[in-house]
Length: 280
Image (cartoon, rainbow, N blue to C red; front, side, top):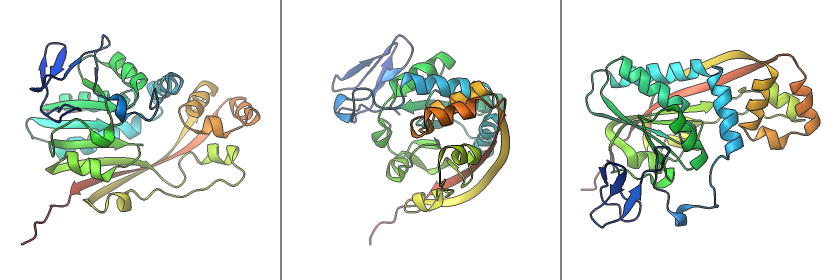
């Protein structure tokens, strides 16, 4: 399933090392992950989320504010994978592993046989994911050229990440599915109203973004209110770009509120790959 990022040959695991027939090898980090991100694939020295963003996201998610989103993703996955065997699952852009770990537990509870991988370009995020679980396959890698054999994933998650339809098509099994979680038009409405003079409420069109390679199968929309104490409000600010788009005065005003009522609006879309046609 895993392929070498240097030569694209299959990788074989022997204890704490991955290697290919061309003698490229990758040692497992002490935290438990494998780093398959080549230096030439980096646009910066430390790509992806930094430790401050990762830790804020971990605290926010651990507090359960987005658990209903995770539960909905898990139920959709269970419905798709029910009674399948040897299922390959990838959380592409898994961050610190909250959704990955909870999906693994949900599939295991329903006795759905699976191997699950969490991949992110941020080494800090994957280190945090390892702290969640040592039993999952955590990878530092470039999602645009994910180190997997073609068309092997029965289920791929793309949760609040930039959509890369070409990469997802390359990964997706012919009978596989992709679940995309994206923000609705009024997601975090009150936060945007507090930060921006003219906030924009525009829904991301995941269906259009995936349309070239994928057929839209179903959508589940979630729309609910969470009530955040100041500590969680601060974590939400620092796990998103809103922290550096807002002034210290605005942040202080938000944090002075004993509770912030915040609208959460999410779309969960399921896609299947469009079969490739060959010219006659």
